[in-house]
Amino acid sequence: MGLVILTLPLHAQKIKVTEGDIKTLKNESSINIEFTYNDMRVGKFKTEADYVAKKTEEYNKKEAGKGDTWAKSWVSDREERYEPKFVELFTDNSKMKEDKNATYTLIFNTSFTEPGFNIGVMRQNAYIDGEVTIVETKNRNNVIAKLTVSKSPGRDVMGVDFDTGWRISEAYAKAGKSLGKYIK
Image (cartoon, rainbow, N blue to C red; front, side, top):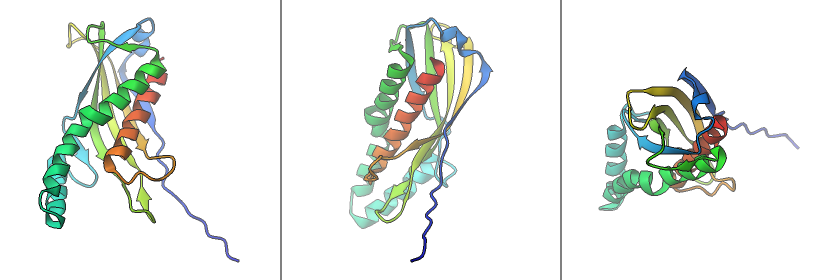
């Protein structure tokens, strides 16, 4: 019998402070959390718009209207799936509650999304990259700290994550969890 070795690409998530100091948050019990998607790239595409246009066209060719429905979900999944997962795991792990009136605001800008794929016999995990900016809520020009989150992986533990939105929501969950622990 021969030995078959299967190698899978591993994505190690990294969090790095690039400016300022997160110690300011040490005694805070709450934080406001906001999300942006400015200049986000997707997969091999230079812009999100290029990715959405290509996928919409592909899906509409397979079934009329399917691409249009997919394009709406691509955007609505942010508020309905990704952001709540991030917030839930961030607050659980940082021991801070989310509060729009908190002294500080954490702004998570997703700069890159790899949607990944799962076709049963072959898969690529999703992952996201983001920039985190922590500012005073009442004076947004006062930046407390900036951080980067690189290669936050998203996949289902059981490998049944055929839905792109599910994989990406898991990447946000991992980012929230890791960032919450890091700030704590």
